[in-house]
Length: 359
Image 1 (tube, one colour):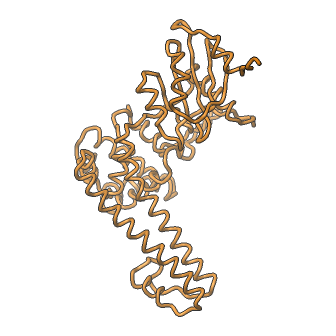
Image 2 (tube, rainbow, N blue to C red):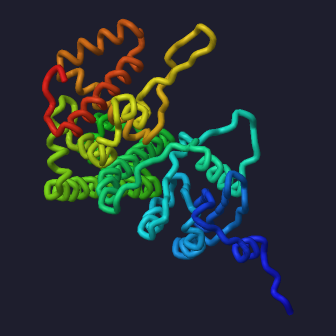
Image 3 (cartoon, helix red, strand yellow):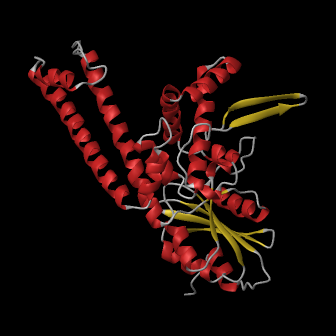
């Protein structure tokens, strides 16, 4: 009995590409499958589904190496393992920034097949913006710095659960629980309530104590790691800026691992989502809200650090008050200061120089 070939198998079997062809490949990467689209010689060629196996994907794509101009997929939870493997095998690969991928204004169908075809087409037309692919070591440094925020978020949720528990069962909060002092937490452990409620509250307190211990352990490990690493010098350098402690300094050094790739202050501001958008129609031109691209946690930490900066630096405080008098809104003024703080840290990283007043 003759084996029937799929459209993908027929196409891959019959096609023969050379260096004179121009092949752009878009991949919609998921945990269990890769949707792959070929854009050949300025026209859609074929799209198909492949298993989420980097080695098998490499074997498929290597057949077309002479014609491949670019392979693209969007940054996401699957990370950079596929990109690194393709780069190791001399295939041109770039990671597209999802927030900068063109979107149609009208409501359209959205499927993985459509997404991969769009990526291939946009890559061919030069319509995509790309992110830098970090090395394995750079990504490990960044993950270590991000881990603290993950634990802090877990700790915040447990604290909210404890307060919700007290409210639900009409149990008054001990004095000092608003700032979670050790004395207040100890009082929670001694509150006289029913056996069942006592058991539930003790479980929540155990979670809180465990996460606190994990945070402390991580702080110690992070401090030792960066002290031995070249990033440690950059972290110390960034801490010379008022309002910048070790946590923000580590975040900036690891998230902005190659600061010189940004050509100007506008680029670094846009990357972190702190640059204002512009809305223009006819003769009307006004600044809109910030773009909010990048990691929200990192952006909010920079804004929080800006409050500390204006408390410690009289010159920064005067600048903040001037912006506040123009805008009349504290949120806009402090966001503008966070943008200035970001630019300061970026320049310090590029110049490898500590902060000086009037920077």
